Structure formats: C-alpha cells, structure tokens
Image (cartoon, rainbow, N blue to C red; front, side, top):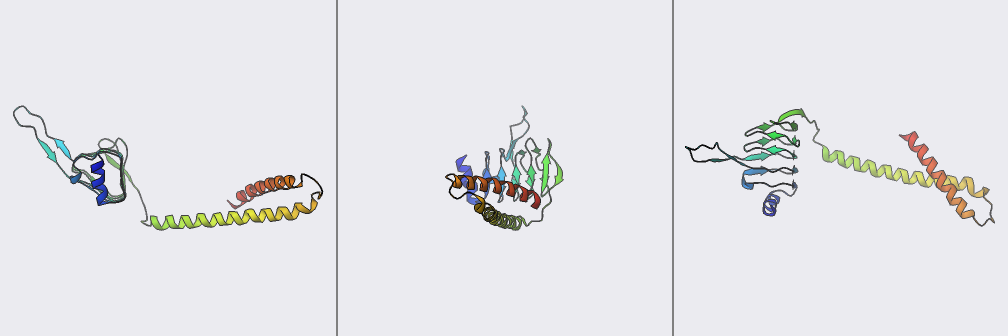
Length: 187
C-alpha cells in the first residue's frame, strides 16, 4: 500500500488516500481528491465450466475535488467535485456528473452541489474578517478596562490592604458582564 500511495503522490501532492488501490496505473486521480474506499480496476467474468475464466480491466477516472467514501466499479468516470457517500456503489461504466452527491446501491445522484468556484477567495475573505473581529475584541476589552479604572479607582479606599485584589475582581466582573452584554447587542 505504501508503494501505491507513493506512486499516486508523485502525480499530485494534494491527494488523500486512506484505502487500497488495485491496478493504480489504471486509476486516473486528479488533485484535491479524498479516497476512503478500496478502488479496483478489474472485474472477473462469469465462471463457466466450458469456458476459461476471464478478467476484465477498465480505467477509473476520479475528477478534481472529489470525495469517495463508497465503491467505484471498473470503468466509472466520476466528475469533478462529486461526493460519493458511504455504502454507495457506482456501477461499472457509470458516469457521475460533476458536483453531484451520489447515494445508494446502485448509485444515483440525489442533488447537485452548487458553488461559485471562488472558494479560495472566500476563505481569504473569511480569514481577514476573523482577524478584524479579533482586533475589534481586543480594543473593546482594553476600552472596558480603561472605563472601569476611570469609574472605580478613585472610589476605592487608598490605604486598604486588599485594594489590588478588589480592583482586579471588580475589573474581571465588569469586563465579563460588559463583554457579554456588548456581544449580545452587536450580534
């Protein structure tokens, strides 16, 4: 299995194979594919006493960004972005449309997943928004601490031994309560 994974990895760096692939030279696997089920490119012919046993080999094609959890029979062509669910059996010579969700035995497409094709841009935008939200929360937290110190420091007794403990306790309670209230109001 390690040899098969190494040969497949040499073709594409972004392939996740968690299964055994028989006849790896007949399996055409594109980038960003996740395979969790055994793939076999051969099928035995009917057994007959009068004829010799036969074996057929057919190529399997799995497109870009597919997730294969079910069985793919020899000769199948899986379109890009397809999802083959667990316990689904794609029949011999079947063609799975691009971005289809496939279930059942024999497999059939239940729906077509829609997408804009700008997944990388949306991930980048989401990451930037998360960083901006983090910066906002940090400034919000420090603003709450400054307001609390302005409100409470003059009113605490100066010569009291436990003044720092009381100050930090009040700051913790104040910041927790104000953060929860402002989070509720913002969202």
